[in-house]
Image: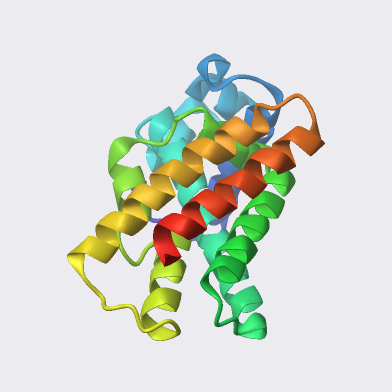
Length: 196
């Protein structure tokens, strides 16, 4: 973001930009979305949009980060209630919560599955301690007694990358039944990798 909004009017403008971009993402491919189209949908001038965002990519990244922050917050509440001490069940809970989250947010699905998040934002969101992988790391260290290490971070990075690709593959299946079959296999694969 170019500048941090302070006044309520500026906060409303930012929210309009996010809402309009999310609505457009749910309707059309990202390639067809331009800053002019976002500004028009938000009911603001292109100049007003550029006061806060330098380009379309920064808007997309901001939306992705907001979604991931929201998911992490939601997941923490779920996990605090469960207090599982079983790695595969814990991972299954994380995956199920993420699938529910994706189902509720077609705009985030479009961003995540289309590989539209910038490399720098993705690095920050998948770094050790960030995002859902960070919660899995915390669980492994705190509840399972796994030693915090560089090799654990690498393992979690690999599991996160594999998980993202397999979830995208699951969503490309023609039916929900087939999607769920892929997700079941993915959980077993990642559980074996992380917890055996």
